[in-house]
Amino acid sequence: MPKEFGRSQRVASQMQKELASILQREVHDPRVGFVTVNEVVLSKDLAVAKIYITVLNADEAGKKTNVTALNEIAPFIRHELAKRMRLRHISELHFIYDHSFDTGMRVSELLHDLDQPQQDD
Image (cartoon, rainbow, N blue to C red):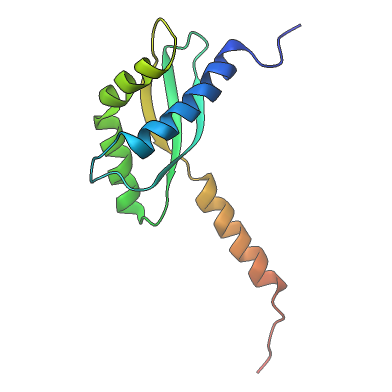
């Protein structure tokens, strides 16, 4: 019977908290805006971490710029993460933009439009 919360899930949860703190306090790159860490998905061997992020108040170009900048400074972020987490090896970090927030906002707008009574001229 598998464990309900395996090691990779526990490490991913802690990594998400630490990454949010690092992005807020340690990263001073002007290309990086207000970034939210939505989810961290680790491989089974904890070697690779996919970090899903959203960027508030940014257009498509701004979102791509943020993801590119984060992937460029990933070694610095990984080093800061190594200082904070008690692991023998720290995962390789890959930042990916999470479109689920944008999709949810679009669905919300469409549902709101359906609620509005239709006006006939």
